[in-house]
Length: 76
Image (cartoon, rainbow, N blue to C red; front, side, top):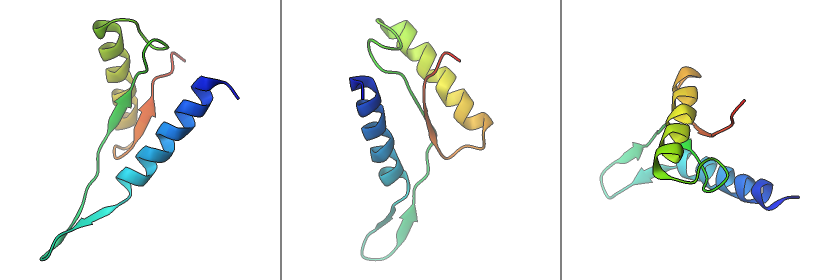
């Protein structure tokens, strides 16, 4: 397995855990949801503009698919 595949799998597992938890305090609980677009340096860009653009495209794809999720940028 390539480094990129291992890193991507680890990142996906982290986001699955983070976005599926409820958070509690002494008086209430909160369910947190988020939409996240991810671009990895240097795979998806080598400067701020490229990375931001590609992460924004991934975020758009998440929101188009129904929100409350994440996507790692893919040029396809």
